[in-house]
Length: 269
Image (cartoon, rainbow, N blue to C red; front, side):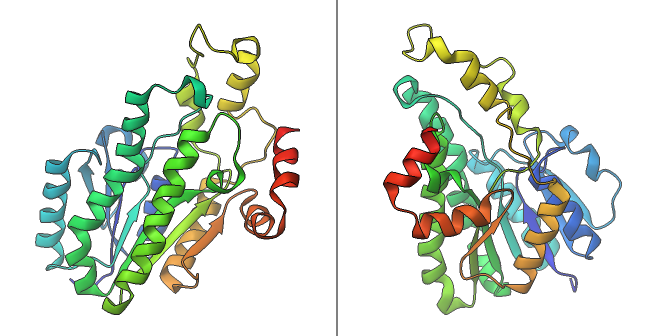
């Protein structure tokens, strides 16, 4: 097929993946949009050049089925793979359930790694791009986001290593270090509660407000974010990291020049 192709995970309505899919579709790409439940991709319904897939990024068989579908429809190549699917997590480190922590890593780290490994032959064939959506939380040590931040930073380190390893094959690898974006992600925390024995129970309401996005931060619109990100991906104009979203640029420069003591003091305040 002659048009460019892109495979995106995590394309449920109201999120980054959906906005990326819409933006690529407008540019004439053949878009493979995936989510755990295709009924949650109504914003993409009826669009031309759009293929919908059921995909749980922790399910090896569903990943293999997706690879075979793309291989058959695209003649054995894929121009862009975007690992966007992920799960947020908001809890003090002392209260983290280890089984839940492993699930977060399955979704945020090992799932994307499986996708990269399985799609690599198709991307190498196209001398294409692998894009991993990460987070500024991996740089600013925000209280109660330790597990999520650790998982996203882990994915970014894998991405940076992969960038060097795939460079000889003509493959472009980049992390999209994402700041605050207005998505449906905060709704996951509507029924959020601390464990009964938590040391932080006295400030549970304050933490819950932060988890739901009530921190006073003006978040970037998803379509504005998607347009900037897609321009970066298509133009291959980053050095392996593209920073986008509210506070992303500030974090980029702040993490490079601000002493840790000052940074920690600012976060605590």
